[in-house]
Image (cartoon, rainbow, N blue to C red; front, side, top):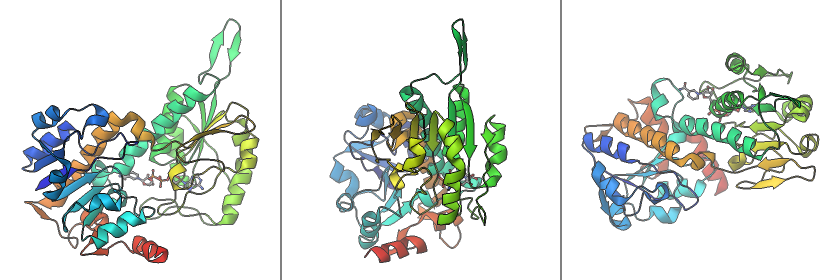
Length: 378
Ligand code: NAD
């Protein structure tokens, strides 16, 4: 097959391929054609791609002959125009929120393979780009908070007195939350964490953090994919009320709560933020899907009247783009290696992974919930 990669918009420094991934794809018998300057965000020169076995060509050329185009972010509909019908577009496609891209894929006869729809199974772990990027996001969130906050994270005993450790509260303990807990612990903070899925309590404790328990009433748990079930408005209200004390005593709050396919749940309202100490920092990892925090501005850093800094910067993995690209490119390479056998895509009827990730085919959207969202928006 002929593979290419579509350059990301300027604010996104991650790449869908790195030279090591190109080498692997070439060894598997694929041809890789990359547009000139593709590696510029990471200072990977055209000669490095050529050395890895790719051909570097003009951008339009790279697209025109591609069977597979790899992306980091959902390509704008205009970008898709240069691809021939039948081409596979593989990567983050943001299926529930980037509806114009989903529509353009279907209308253009393109076959979107959406990594957000990857089954969260042990076998699929090496292809799981949500996990590889979320883990880095959790790390970056704590590093950003540590830079912004006006105190140190570890306890320090000095001749002039003891400095208390910073208190961090991690809300949402999926992949990003676990890495945030581990990073905050490594830096010496005292860490509390909460998730609506009680199953994560043990994982929190094993990282040396405290799992705080709240009584939200009614059902709360997870889907068979491990995603959180959405809370009712009443449960969310109870959660906000019961969290107030922990929130007020926290110096750093990292929120990562997501409910798959829906806007992020609102966990902290303005009253909770106004109860925090001046100089505290909140990093809202759900900024791109509406935010967990009232006052979050996606892509920005704001300071409230009471001196609390709220970071809605995203995507955080882009700030560690070298590592993020390495693991993302590996995820895509493993997916290609799995999904195609002797140049033919495994049939959806025979393969759970291809069935799950193939978002558009034959001019239609295959995923029921995404199709319903698209129809509702028409
Ligand atoms: P996610 O990004 O969908 O959500 C982040 C966290 O927010 C989740 O833990 C969720 O329970 C939590 N959350 C939702 N509403 C909340 C609320 N109101 N208050 C507090 N927390 C709330 O999660 P993710 O990191 O993508 O992980 C999703 C699931 O997939 C998890 O069960 C994870 O263990 C599982 N997973 C499995 C594998 C694997 O087996 N290969 C790999 C990765 C993830």
